[in-house]
Image 1: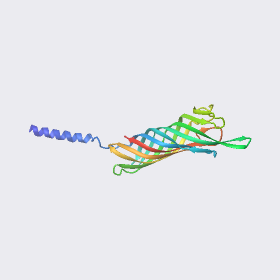
Image 2 (image 1 turned 90 degrees about the vertical axis):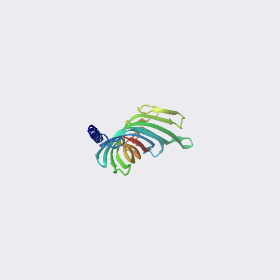
Image 3 (image 1 turned 90 degrees about the horizontal axis):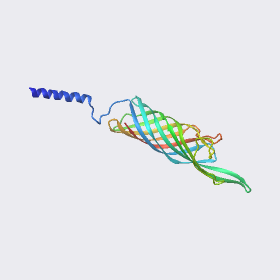
Image 4 (image 1 turned 120 degrees about the horizontal axis):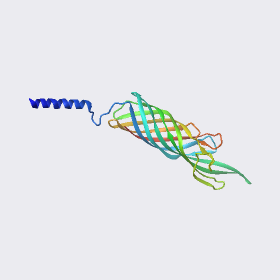
Length: 234
């Protein structure tokens, strides 16, 4: 009799335990998620000055994103991203000499770092197998934290390397503005690997709105980038 009672107690204990303890790989329903992000990218500057030709440079960004789900297929997405952007200009300089106009070409390289706070609406599919497809659309305000300029003047051979252009009074005679604002568009997929843990991959395009360089004229220069997104969601 005692043995039967022990079996009953053991059975009830196992049943109660299984009600409150989920398997390690079980997905817990919740309305939020965090993501660690790394994104290699190509970046470039676009100027309204027709004498300037833009060049593409390699950059990257990293940070953390936070998604809050307010519907089965909708989420508010934000976070904190540090971007290391690069840009290159080729500028045509005309100098009058005894023979007439002579055109020189100069190259200027910029290194710009920003703290960005992306604000996006995320649209996502229902999970198909282990995959979830998503798209994002929003804006990204940014605050410049570092700006450097490398420039060689073809007229006199003077070279300026990694000059700090945060302040207006500098040898490069150009200043990096404090704020940036970009349109952000992204597409990608999430792959569930265990419980709420997923890996994410996608692409993102950032199109700048604000002038980021002040050289004393009224011609705007914006920054653009195209990146590959890789992330770990938990």
